[in-house]
Amino acid sequence: MPRMTLLLVLLLASCVGCRRVSFEDSVLSKPDVRYRVGELPKHWRRVWLDGNDLAFAEEGTGRALSINATCEGHDDPPLPVLTRHLLMGFTERQEVATSVVAMDGREALRSRYLAKMDGVPVELELVVLKKDNCVFDFSYVAPPGLAMERMADFDALLAGFESEHVG
Image (cartoon, rainbow, N blue to C red; front, side, top):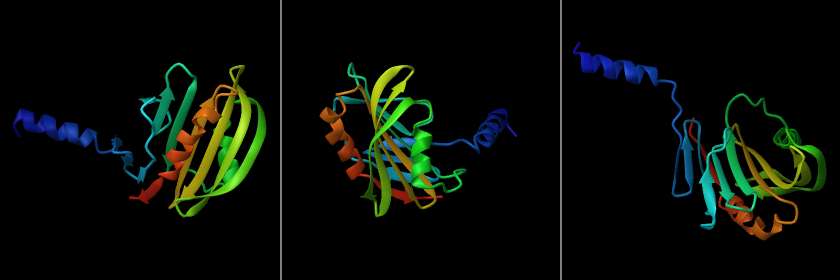
């Protein structure tokens, strides 16, 4: 086998377990799932946030949005447990509101909290959804008093959500 062919075979073999994630035209695709989110205004910039499929920040305001889908290893916990998981790392958590909302043909749990992260006060808007053996979570974090100014952006992101299980 020529050296270049051997190198190519080894390279492809080493990537058998690679996870390819793409985001184009408001659609995120990864091996187990594909989903669409509503479009965000231009003031939101995509950023990389470890442990999330997508994250966006509004420069200079402290506002951030994140979205993640987990389709393996979650043991099917109830929505309140999934919400508590999103609150890990936050202290002095105070629940402000919780409601069940319709999302992509299922019930989702939407919660609002006041909390602190590393001693800094924040407002949190969290949504968790289970569909087709996947858990979807959406988070909006803002400094106190600044969340409502961009809540319509978060709502539009959620309103455009559609999932498709591909695994």
